[in-house]
Image (cartoon, rainbow, N blue to C red; front, side, top):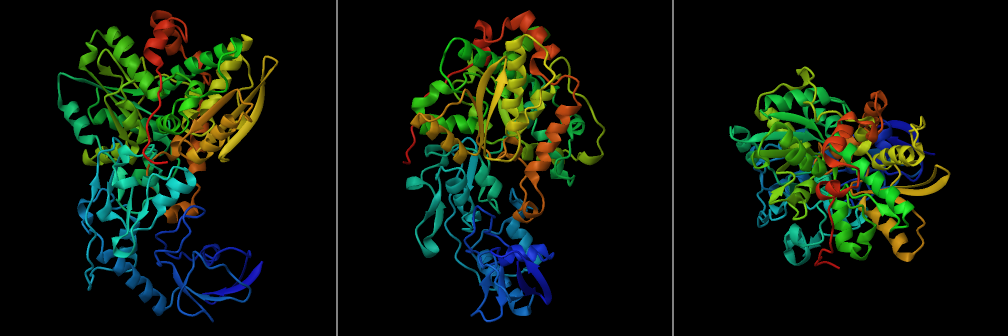
Length: 579
């Protein structure tokens, strides 16, 4: 511990922490813009300036480590004026069309302008040329909104280990761009959307599909079905001021019905199908000495990653489609026949925590007989926008239930939304199928938690199964390098592109850096999903009565001929233009 004085308060703080962190321990919120703890700590924006006795000029608090006897001033007139001038310089070169901006009301730059009372910019800078890249199916990039904080670069390069974007040129010519200024859709971007989550402004945002969905809702000749992913229900409420991790399942269903969707179904049911198929595929590989380890295929950003980076290892992927794609295929086959409706008149909308799902749904492999399994994907944020546009007061809504017969799901499906959840759900079913028993031990704590890579050995029917769980593409790369080197001794691997899993997906509510310093968003959302699981009567996918009926009446056995036609797919090498 070291002794420091900060704004007149004498305090003890741990050595080797920054002034920014020290201030936080005593309730002082020093503003930041470029700073993301452990991700982007470069001190470029200069918004976090403070005065330190004995130092020449101002000091960036996010970079300066505390020292014994240090005297720090964070709120003097000089400090405030310096921060204000830095902010004005940033704003002078910024496209200030705030009222029509997609991030209006949730923009860290806008928040700083309000905080410092900046209403006029007395000096106008030259605004950088506006380049809007909207060719990607998932992400829109707008250089006029960029403040060169480099948070997106650090996220893509250091966390995800992709490096699809970087800062090019110098001085006023500096801009965030891609290899040869190509579209994000034409480089090695995986569309995970973590850059969107960490962008403080609207320089990066999802490609919206609200208009086309609303047009279909007005079409009386189209049956519009909607399904919602597990992670959406524990994050949507945040868009309406509700506490992080609030489970708003019932209110969400009510809102979707008010928006005019003909039927509201649960992607969790699709997740149960995924587990039936994936667990059966895994057992087949184990029993018949087929390719191991088997790796999950639920995450489209991960799929794009392996197709580009490790195409020689595609045989390790499960052939299962992701839950919402499986469910879309079921809705346009089994359900269409059941209600006697031409599947061409059915329009399936998926509400996802993920922007990569927008890319996934239009992949060539995700169609049958000329029809895509899913017709549109909207994010959690897009759904919130639709709810607000419809003048729905979300927090006071009553709860409604998903529509029958496709709205019944298990606890295993709920935990799909967090890292380790797919693995745990698959193990619950695999152990029952292998032993022929309904086993009571169903919590696999060893695959839970926040660690980026989790390894465990579980014993099923006397056989040791080595498993690994990775979240974040940087961790996925580490696992794949183990496999490539021949050092891996895994049987089953779960990989999710977003650190923490779908609950932290690129389409989830964006939390400013300030909030993330105070609240463990990932843990609260994950805890909410585990709570849903624990309260469910049925917590194993293979025990879902809806699934049992559909397999008995229509699909036949899991991993069988028709199941493969509808619920499985294939993947192939994708070219990347960046080495």
